[in-house]
Length: 310
Image 1 (tube, rainbow, N blue to C red):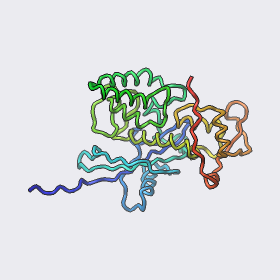
Image 2: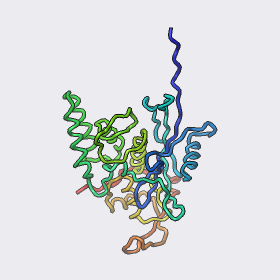
Image 3: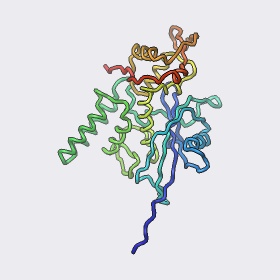
Image 4: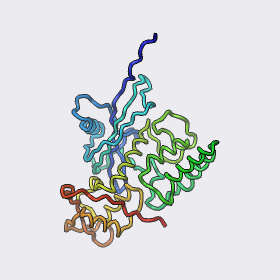
């Protein structure tokens, strides 16, 4: 009789998707020249996971965290240490912060969202990468299926996730995982396989680009019904700066009048009484977030007033 096999040992790891707006670009804090998200083991002497997260992020990056929420737990069977075989369970967090400048220059390690997911940036209109590269190759992948049912399923999934006429900016993870399944990007947290000709987009180590995709999707959904964008804004800002911040995160253009009407109707901001000439035109009013609104009422759910592409 063979000996009983005990449960596979597990290592608990914490990951952080730490986001800031730098030069009106959504950026994520990374290590090793953009290859990794800040990550490390959960240490048992911390009273909570979030306490542990704050401790090692600040130790690794010297960057204090502001707003934090738990994102997702990644526990796929393929997530194992190569040497010991221990299964790695990653508990990821989304953190928002304002950029900090040190020693007269920007801190190293900040990378644009769109370095990793260039097809997600529609601020200047529909992605040319999508039309010229991704959709033709996904169409070829769909047509290569031998079974009619599989071919039909692939075409439906491509239509839902990559439809440029009804683009859903929240489907970041679904698009990335479909590209992985089609053999067009590496990683995605599954067993490695060669990708001879990946579509443009910087790869990351392990499954960190998959974790980042999850964080971007959560943030894009959240800015539609909670005022978390103000965690990324300076204390005083113009309405134009606020609109460009939301556009940068969503990867979409917004209708100017509708956006301002929405902000005013919800009472999210108030005038400071000051003006700024930094916009390059007529002096613009400066506003600040009415933080007391969080105590007065829950902000009503609403969709961003996205502009239609021409």
